[in-house]
Image 1 (cartoon, rainbow, N blue to C red):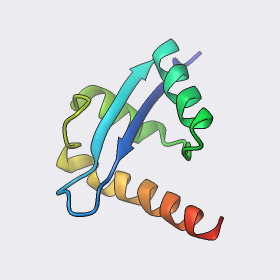
Image 2 (cartoon, rainbow, N blue to C red):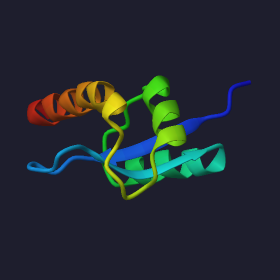
Image 3 (cartoon, rainbow, N blue to C red):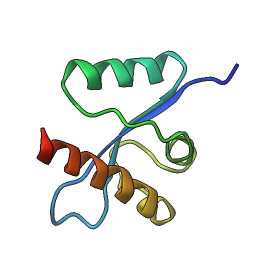
Image 4 (tube, rainbow, N blue to C red):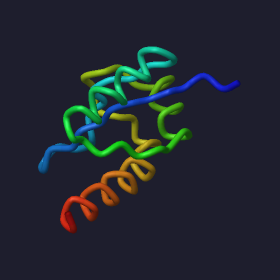
Length: 85
């Protein structure tokens, strides 16, 4: 059985990259998802991005350059979905 991994990112217009807000495995991952859902924040499943962020970024920092493309796809999906809701 795979252990759940979750990360939370945020992008502010004008920032050079998205910021990692939180990352965790197991119960921490479940908490991240629960807080997002309770707050009405979109939850997108991207296991590869979550794994990359969990091992290569520290919460509060900009995400690494090698994660930008995957993060951009997730953020574009969320922005498009929010526009249509």
